[in-house]
Length: 322
Image 1 (cartoon, rainbow, N blue to C red):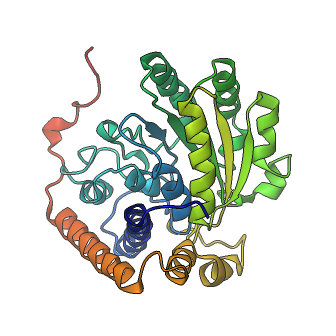
Image 2: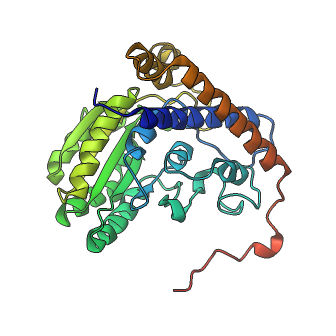
């Protein structure tokens, strides 16, 4: 395990715990009928977003997917503003106009969750090209799923990143299903990372339940990109704990979620590893749990009491004048 200081470890646990608590609470609140639209939950995949984004800073940008809450939190988007956005309130990160699938905060380098499968990788080529010209070491990171790995936009972005030698990292979060279709039926190769060779970039496969494995692989790829070494494709293999969307009956799978929760869970594995090695104590981690639970309670309470968008703002945020 690469040596990681205590503060970084605590921050990583807080980030993963915040994502888990946020998603489980949204799962509960959605059932009340108070949340409009669709939500696609990230629970179970926390080690991926956290392991990658722990290495990022204000120079860097990320593009997300329709399952974007975890990426947003990991890149520093305000949790209360996110909850308000999901509730469709005017205090939301996009003033209540985007909802779950379109949370964005450009001030944090979060280009947005995206309802277009494979919509993120081309955006990252743009920000990575800008970072290359600026010369400040910025990196663009695109998160996408196994369904998006078959999209032309993703393959074109991989090619372009190599042709232009961009500081970009492509993170394929392979949870085994494109909606309800198993990747074993829809992805021609055994591993998404195997496709990296066709584009002249490194391809790496990591255990998505292991924060430390993701952290190490992402650290190498991001460092390489910052130093002018070009793009990398990382495949993170994991399992989502909830359905493709809230309401998904999940008739296409059985038993794997229970197995993952009981035997593979990234939070439990993290806690066991750091306490066994005396890197952190249970008391420290328990304190984070209490802190996070209070934050999520406050986020829901504030979202429920926040005003809805003003009808007069309907036409705002549509056009940008440069």
